[in-house]
Image (cartoon, rainbow, N blue to C red; front, side):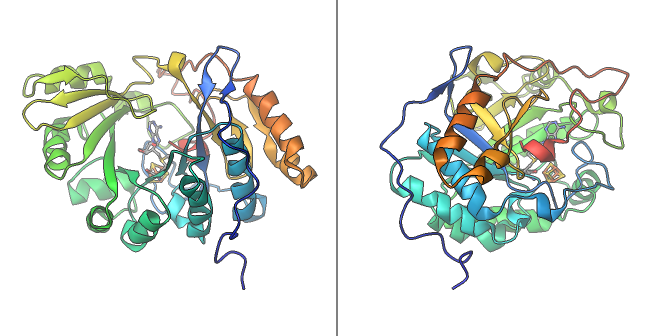
Length: 348
Ligand code: SAM
Ligand code: SF4
């Protein structure tokens, strides 16, 4: 049988619940985000240039290697794992990895297995994701207008994403919609998106655009501080801070008029690094200890050096000692990205 069809029957010999890794600033590292591919079937204008050069396929870790790496992190105290990309659901045979990681949920070693997706392939995968142990997903939708959706994603079809959302809800997956707030593009539409999301039992989170990677446009034209958006929304809605936590950087408010939750992710206007609990792994086995810094650790070499995970474990420990205090994003008229790699390399 093709070993990629099903994950191994037996779980790897992981010990019982591990103590979390602690970084030099005393923060526990319990959350791993894994970009399983840098490729995508969309070309969102704030995320990618239209003509992107992607990694040669030969440089990618295999799905078995990604499983081994993720399992090593779980062994070291990671409790939440998010698959992202690029678009995670365009990676060939991705369900092999999801099912393989699902065994840690079943065994109680992992609290949450989730993913961030553009929704284009969700209709096809929703049931399988649920069966593998996924319970919540983030779907990125920046507008509910089909023509604008095509404009911002360049290649996307909103009706496919909506079919995906329908299928995911039918399958029992809880959905959070993510929208990047873009000045003059969707700021006026956020009230409508809020009503749509809350009317369907979904949270909505808005995100400030971050200066990552060269794109074809000027980021200063796109950037909208969320403090401004919040003030705009407060003219129509009653927003009350509610302290809700999902383990991510979003700060949530309850919207009295809809009864739903709205999250704000503000990497630019409010730096949330003091509570950062995460590290990010790319599909080539490079570990970034911060989304907004260039320092990284090569775990692929450690992974391939030996079948014994001790070597890998030591490389992970060394990387965690280098987790920096925080990022220092700024968007200025030079229009130079703060980090050269695109968001699709380390994932959102
Ligand atoms: N393709 C999937 C998707 O779009 O959900 C997963 C990867 S995508 C890089 C993850 C999230 O990052 C998406 O919500 C996307 O809108 C957001 N994103 C991409 N580039 C960004 C940027 N420069 N600033 C802020 N958010 C960005
Ligand atoms: Fe693809 Fe997600 Fe980037 Fe859009 S935001 S181009 S869907 S990786």
